[in-house]
Image (cartoon, rainbow, N blue to C red; front, side):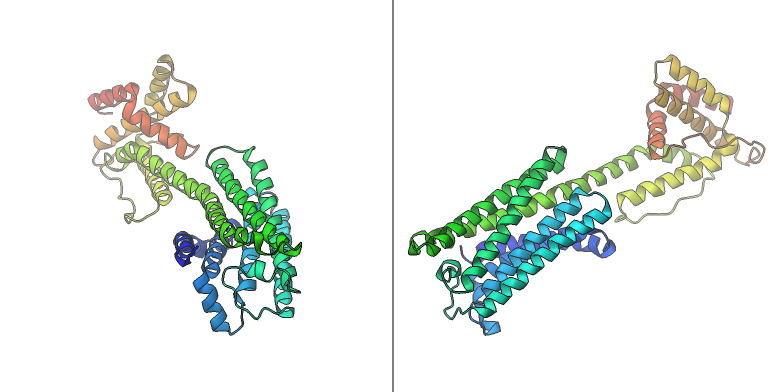
Length: 394
């Protein structure tokens, strides 16, 4: 693999991180979001610093021959820890238990990183090796132990990740299960990387010489690159799809509230104009504003609500075979439609203050408002009530 084979995945991970940073800035205390950003950062760093051109540059900048080797090993260990911490926070559970398990993984791999750097400082690696450091120094005192330790730590993380994600995937559905299965595939590739590396290193330890070196030099790196990238996709995909799904749900609710919003905000002549939203406002904020406008409209139309319209529409809806929720929504919609017509027929506001009728009872929140909005547009009972109230003047 040459430099671009490392830098292209690193750039893709950097782009994904850039999209996450604004959310991190506003929700710094969210453990799951912090874990995602840490994983993307460390995965990108592994790709960047494992590229041969970067290895050579780091060795030159530090003035320490082969300093890139322990640096990459430490980044791989930190990335392994970030994956474990992310899966712990992602799965959830009692907050204290989640924090305790996360701290244990972080402390364990921080210890591995300290030992890796200590072994490198104790050892001697005078010949710069850009691609085959592992096999070249496998039998060197301290260096061999450092190589074995980083491979063992990576292997443990890979086994734990495969086991945790596989068990979890059997308990869930949808995008979460898809993401977990993608992570399992990625970590199976990581296990293949470990197998290739360990085969070559153990081959050196048992005296086979360079016979298996190609497994470490040419087979393992593509497996590691593919495994890390696929695993990162598995982590990000369910979160991204959930975000898109939530956004779609909000926009759908916003659109479905439209008929009711127009009925109480535009058809009622003196209803005050709501707050103007900028075009970039988030969908959930727009939904909240639209619901607020509707409730304000209900308060404005309150004196014109006539329960007889609601009771009549409720009876008609039941007679037409509607279920309880639908019948109530139709009844509320009919009362709103009649109130709008009554308000339009009273431009001087003579009725205001003369009635103690309150707003209709969409007290269960947005879902009831959506039902009422749907009934306003589609219910024949509401259409008939609207027609009758227009003819009668109220």
